[in-house]
Image (cartoon, rainbow, N blue to C red):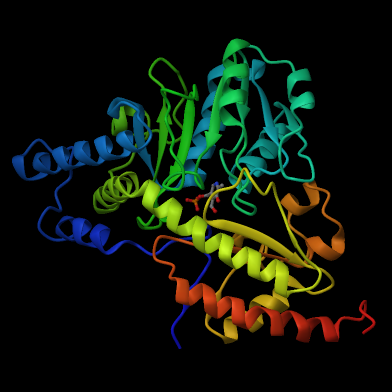
Length: 385
Ligand code: PLP
């Protein structure tokens, strides 16, 4: 059975062009880019190219891009690096629907004595801007809001938030792990200071990421040791994966509009059909301000996990909540923060598409899903037929 993979917010297939670009760096060019000799040194210029490719995706300067091991490391670097640079003066403002890479890191910092406030969201997953504008922001404040949510695809008003933070003299970090490669990111247009990207969400391998740090912003490094990455991130560079990430960013930039149009068309077709054909189905998140590839739908009175298992029998991979919360029977923290009633929150399914998703695959899901919902509804103790 062929897999129909609709879990691209969890991870993506490595693009064939990326695999090809990485290949020589496992065999032919295995030198250490920090070496004095030509064999190692020649690898360095390829790292420079990758840095330029990543910088170009977000309209940054290559000197502002630092390679890391993943999105979680980049988020940790932003938050902990800020706290270390401000010592006991540091304060953090974040939202209640951040990925655990941000939320759990903030909560751990709170345990260490850092003042952390969490701004709530409304039923559509958008931040409560009145609460945000009431928060105290000064030069010792880091505001960390995600660009787009991994579970619902909801996009925060990042330009408005970052402009406000800058007008108050604060520092602004955004977790752009889900936004990168799906919507335009332009750090000249939107005044973010720090931004995190993860390779495996945009068709590069798992285990590589970047942190963008605007020139002039000072953060203490999280990983200390050698002088790699201009002293910002010690450790011999994961050269093949960095090359792959550079290529993936180049591909994403060149096909951003085409991919977004393709994904939006298929996502809308899927969403419309499921909402029409499955009684008790409800869309989660702001219908307009969403990533083009994501839909999150609840099917009242049935368990999301049961739907996933039955979809899996048809070779369809989707997700309930985020991949990181799968296995837990509690509704995700995002659904709870949005105030979604339990009977809906418990049954939320996320379908996330990619440039490789085909119309035929979407048609199969549209065919398979309604009978699954009907069957599980029939088993629900809450529904009287
Ligand atoms: N931030 C968001 C919004 C994510 O969706 C994820 C992964 O799911 C991460 C951070 C963590 O990225 P990584 O898996 O590269 O550590």
